[in-house]
Image (cartoon, rainbow, N blue to C red; front, side, top):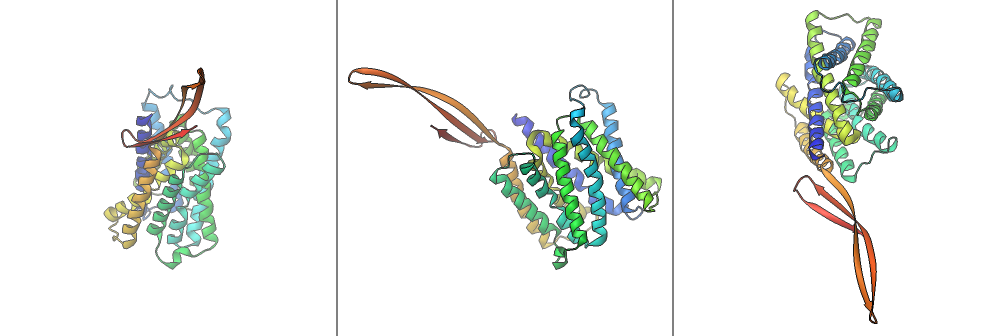
Length: 335
């Protein structure tokens, strides 16, 4: 179980790293491609790439159960929300400042955790709530570019709607995360990509060159396909809220890649956000690696009164928690 949780944490971090690649590289591709059309090929790249992975592997085809009719509500919800969210986000980008979009879009983290807690009864400790707060605060610091970032408009409402849709979508995916991961990602990629492509054609966007399409498909496979694949694997073990917390590393990683690829300047906001992000991530890892065990113990106690020996059996619960292998533990006794 310990190894399984460590693998889930690594998967969540890799999911964030893969997704972080999308922003700086997409900016480079957007010079020769329109936003909606580019989004379509990114999603299609995810579906096609993971589909090829599925055809090439044999071990897992019979290990994980395929989606069934009982999973249909969550599957439909996942696909519909994956279509609505990008449309809301695109309209939000058209109506408000880019800094405002970046700021509000980071509330997907909070939306995922809150929905997981209230709608799906997923347990979230005080430590994890603190981690989510710190990571969200870091995302705000990284996104803040002045007073304009807090301007409120109809575009802001749409971005908030997109964040809420993705938060709910994360939880829908959580309900089917134990099923065949390949099948889930293929459905996400092909359905979302196809719908985005149709929308792009309807609004009059032109199909980009074959070279741009090839780059977009490859980027989509890495930044969306592999990212979603790792995200779902992590969700299956540590839940939607904790996976979302690790996924919040993406803004930090994306900023580093922006420095390298786009030669953006290193700001004070970035340094402050880095410190807060590290603190939140440490809390998230600490909470994820905390194991709880409850043992029931019985003790026999003998009493002697006036030469008469009586026997009494006392039973109590022993709750044992430890943080990682050999990193410390505490005991709580309930009599």
